[in-house]
Image (cartoon, rainbow, N blue to C red):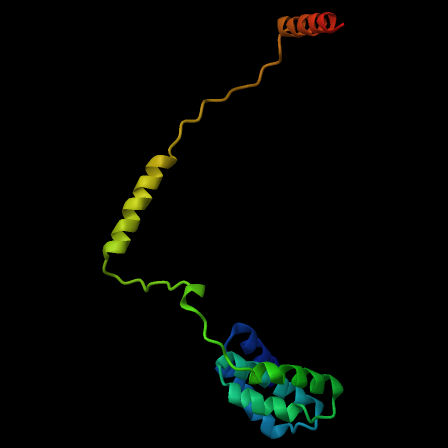
Amino acid sequence: MIPDIIKAEESLDRGDYEQCINYLEKLTEVYPPSEKEGLKIRIILVTAYIGKGENTKAISTCKLLTKCKDKGIREKAKQLLPILEAPSLIRPSNWSIEIPTLSEEPNKSTKLLHTIKKKQTKKEKTYHPPTGITKDLDIGFSILVLIVIASLMILLD
């Protein structure tokens, strides 16, 4: 396997799409789409373009792959193309949480958070009774249980 493809896949796994695209765009000049390596390069390149947000490049590369001879890659490209061409929907603001940026200056919300944490630590202190060695039941307890069971049997008859 080509070392640059391995490096590109590793950078894709790390989420470094820019570096992955840099490796693969150099290889697209060397390997045409008619070769097996060229097809693999372009499939990985489509994934990197999607990750980087370059949908137009991903669509054009995917359209190129729909015309290739390899049936498996052609089917993957045909399945991926409608997804890429679908319009993006606007996400309602209540579907996600906005996390405020942390600054070095303490503001009201961080002060409030510290006071809440102090109150929680005070509430968390609970009394736990001491535990010791568990003792066996005495003979007197066993006799008492037998008497209670015998009396219940007599009363229930």
